[in-house]
Image (cartoon, rainbow, N blue to C red; front, side, top):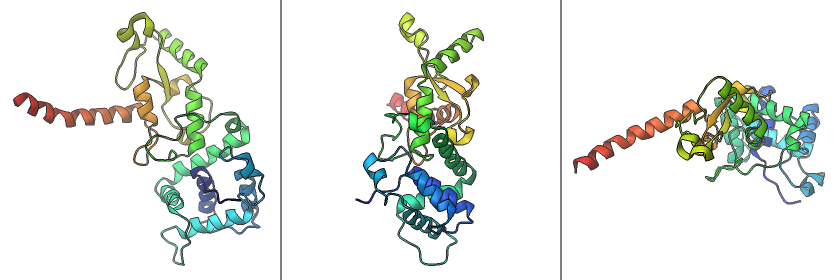
Length: 258
């Protein structure tokens, strides 16, 4: 079997296990190693051929990866193994965002246990478009969030709620109003975005108040992978737009003066 690189989702699950073990490696016969090996072989991330090979994510390979993770911890004083940059990146994220990363690993487990993540097909936007392979919270949670936001019934119920409340249906970031811009053609058209990512809110049932209205451009920017971040709230994206606007002002003034 050709070597198959560990995905970020797999590294997150393994790193969560090592962190729970006091940042110590786990042996191949440890019950938690055996359980993780079984879990990794079920993730909807690799080909059927890979998962059918008994060597794929075997207890021995899982144990070796926990060693890579344990030796990548900055407090480790022994000889480090060559776990690779993705492994070191995940360890760094667990140390910087311990609660968030542990919650993300837990959410992946919940999605697999419920069967939800096996049911959802890969989504075009889940991997980003700027050479970053996955979101910080992993590919599967990004897939799950995008799938939820494409639920037409959920979006329609959110629009109905806004109309009952007398609220204007427009982008909460840039205020783009489809009806104002396109007339009757744009009536009722808008996209929805979760105010909190799954690794923060947990894989709970989506409530209408958990959703924000966005135009397609702002929605794409909220999900865009950039400098290690792959999820933005409407408030965060609005702040980015305001910063960009302030940077443009001196240039505009200079142009008008010339």
